Image (cartoon, rainbow, N blue to C red):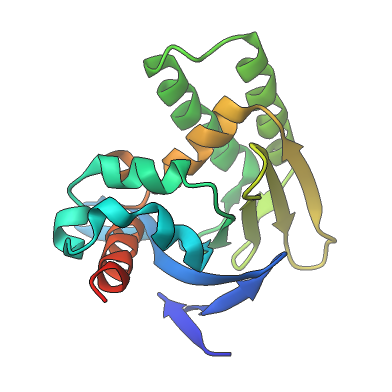
Length: 207
């Protein structure tokens, strides 16, 4: 099984959870400060090949068109297929910084859709607590696993010298917005990732 590089991080072209999932999107989260690119994380998006069955109306569109259309990414998020996000740390930070970033991005999206209630707040607090005690060394791995049939996600964290830790998020609204943080088109945290996903799916849809 081959692998693809994201910056200097190797990503397997396929992983197997309950079934094989293909690497369809990859990129970086980064910021530019005084013309310097600071890279934080590598991102790999794995999806079931069956995702194509749910994107029929986009057939024949090029990746350059798809990346401009947030409705295309809405359809990816709502497709009832298994999804797996693999985030690899490039720049060391405290886990609490990542947790706060995730919390604020998800909360803003929930508030904008009028879905931010007590249950969502509680679910987000648990996620923040999960990351609070972690330290993101270089090459640490965070994963989000979204099963096809359920509206939950399992978050896992692995760093050198320590065992894997996991938590489950069972609030469907929070789960949806975590997906949108990474797959939300023009508002996604990594524009290189959504561009790569649109290009790859555009290729498959034009076959």
